[in-house]
Image (cartoon, rainbow, N blue to C red; front, side, top):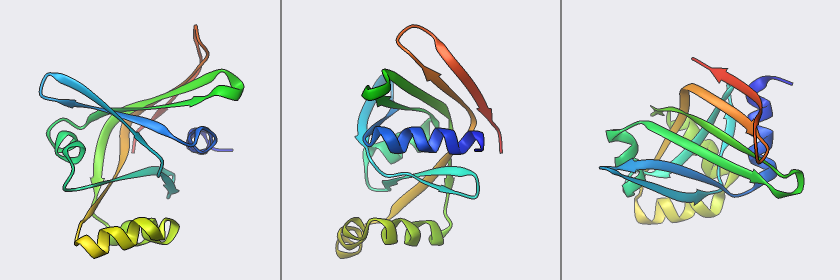
Length: 137
């Protein structure tokens, strides 16, 4: 199994995960549920009309945190968000989550897709990092 697949699988097992960004001088964190592994990159999507997208555009340094209660472990996955404007990624997202696609299309909203570069994934228990992986594209 590839290193990035290990990260993707952990996020899958967690279900809901959290994205932290910076809004001026204040950290902001929100729950997300969608991600997909494409070409050895984990893609996330947020509406371009949302504050989180504006925050990522202003300061691309973000962090994803996922918790697996059954294993008493969590993942910190952080780096620089890289926006990917490939429309095929959005269409794939809407295929995976058609209900989201319907809402976005009905409201004429756009989905912003991104992955993390210069990223670090830390698989942690409550006290230590058990494994640390680095990703650079």
